[in-house]
Amino acid sequence: MPLDNRTSLLNLIATHSFKLGDFLLASGRRSDYYIDCRTTTLHAEGGRLAGLLLYELIREQFPEAEAVGGLTMGADPLVANTASASAWALADYREILELSGALEFEEDDDPGPEPTLVHGFLVRKAEKAHGTGRRVEGFLKAGASVVIVDDVCTTGGSTITAIEATREAGMVVVGVLCLVDREQGGRAAIEAAAGDAPFLALYTASDVRKAHVAAQGFK
Image 1 (spheres, one colour):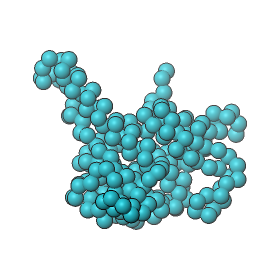
Image 2 (cartoon, helix red, strand yellow):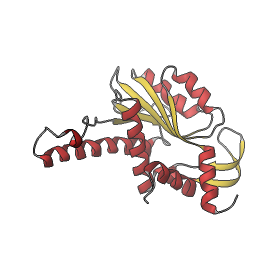
Image 3 (cartoon, helix red, strand yellow):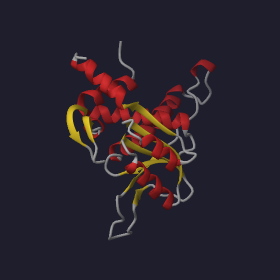
């Protein structure tokens, strides 16, 4: 039986992005494991699945969102693949309508509401010193509802930086999504910074470790 997208992405992260050992993290802490989600989000299938799952969450939880963005560079492939997933969903929907030959369906054949495009933007770590000097690149619209994404949330610092820069640019953060919550305090810090915007993680570090151990065949 084919695996669902959520399980398939978890297995890819556990295989390509998770390592056991002794590591010094960017936060200064030591850990017996390391997660580098970029090896999965820049993997062709991993990127596709991440985009599909994040877009699905946005449609379900934040249908008002016009764009998705995050701090470069962990968020870069997530933003690009999520925006692309929205465009493919809309194209597929319109193809279904075209093939049907009519806009009216029997109840069982109703394709549901039309998917909306979710554009992308990236937050620089610092304003560039040339050109427009913008810190936010890509979609930028004052008052727009947007979702912030990140690949791994440890202390929450990069996610919070993106939230603050996005708000300074005049956009409204309605939700925050993360691929993997390392369960090391980042959630609480992000929720405090996000205010009323919910924080959702696709997986926890415990989920990834469990999948990694299962794939390796040891306890």
